[in-house]
Image (tube, rainbow, N blue to C red; front, side):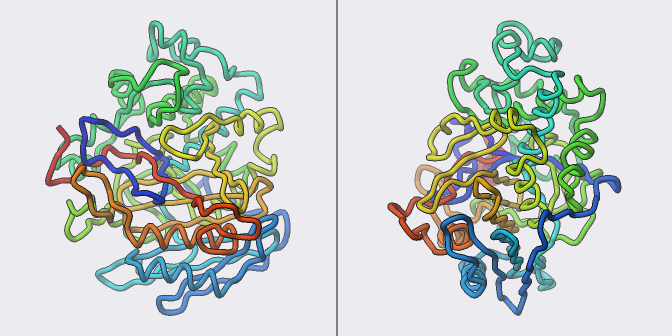
Length: 451
């Protein structure tokens, strides 16, 4: 899902190591109606490569050099060689596009990955949910700075209902606590919740009852509860399930063919198995590709492909999904605690030596995703992979940066900037595009359950 706030009561919570990927939750509900024709504004020259253990490539933004496909292949291959089981990526520079894949989708059979595999995108779902809410703002059905208690008086009550606004939900400044620690709280809970069906109201109440992260408007505190409430808000003002509304007004409008909310615990299209290592708690890493994602709801349950994600952010940043006023609001950011990144309304912003990028990331059990676009949507990279929390923990139970993290950051820099370590033309620093951040689930080691 999206990033969940770390808790001092859960010493072995997931936190990516330095320069590792920031994770944000995503929501998916696959339906036959969710598939539509992919529409591209301009013809794409697409190159797809997948030789034995060989990666594929893409192109770059603005002042970055054009796509260097051999370098992209080599860099993605290095990600696999560093220890990542399997990865798939789509890169774009203007009308040129590249897709590639490396490694295995199933470590038991040796089945290979492919560039267009469907993938649980976790917290990237939050961008889709935020777009839907902002569409309703544009129609005058919601007000960004109205108190949430006006719309959900039975859920968010009292002073918080009067002071927390719709905007605070979308930019994670509400101070509302995190629900995932209440449902993933023992060594058995990850398996125990595999097929459990959670109602969004139940998740919202758990988050509202959890210790608050701060007072409303005080600062950025990532909480999946905010986006479960955003989904309930959509249901209240539209009269539809939020999944149906997002499918019709966001997914179809963007012309996405392989993005959907799952209707069961399985992924319907070709996909990789999803391996969770839990910092050594699962040895060998355990497959969680079959999982009921109702626990993530509109905060992190979507399924998509890497080409679809590039198309989505290109449509969003190009003004196809929101009017200019709402897109400006979406790109109005606040500082993210503990990160050089900034967060808008379901949209993160990162500044590298080769320029600004907008997008999001997502992390759920066994699946991680990054999707970043230049401000004009010209240069894009989306990357999915199927082994998570592979780092070792130090004496303070914090993940130690792994060679896999370094290789991932080098690949993203190559895809976005045309060089590794973000040292492109005019570079003044080597600050990576990605950053450490809290994760979607309050994950504890199965050997050391949360206390």
